[in-house]
Length: 166
Ligand code: HEC
Image (cartoon, rainbow, N blue to C red; front, side, top):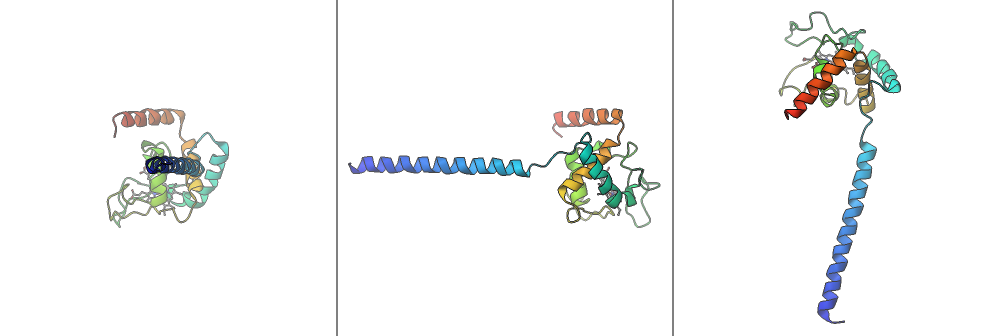
């Protein structure tokens, strides 16, 4: 075998090796993604909603109210300058936000990008308190309490914002 042919074979071998490695990495990555892709927030999933009811009672109701009614006069700033806990029922603005935002606020609190840097709030960050699945469950429970017309408005509103690329 002459030298140039041997070189070509080496190159072909290398390319094949790189392609195979990339394929393995890609496959491994998508498998990993699948494992990490969480069950969505689904207010029609009875098991998730029941789990969420318990999480809500234990971790959210003290501020947001047993009936999701929020704190009294929730639109008026407290003497310490902070906002009271808003309702999570249809009278509040929880339903104005997409699921990703609700999840982010619950996990990280009202920190950037959900509030300006240094914003002071009584809303705790639950990232170190609850697993993601419990945060999703609590939100599924909250959403399960919204009347059908609110669910419909929300869907239309969020679709419109998405279309406008906001
Ligand atoms: C210690 C009181 C307290 C607890 C407990 C609490 N929150 Fe809050 N939450 C607040 C306050 C206060 C706000 C409003 C913060 C602000 O505007 O500065 C808020 C805001 C929120 C918002 C944003 C609502 C909106 O319309 O912008 C979400 C979502 C939320 N809370 C979810 C939860 C969930 C889910 C739990 C339970 C896992 C929970 N909170 C527990 C006090 C609390």
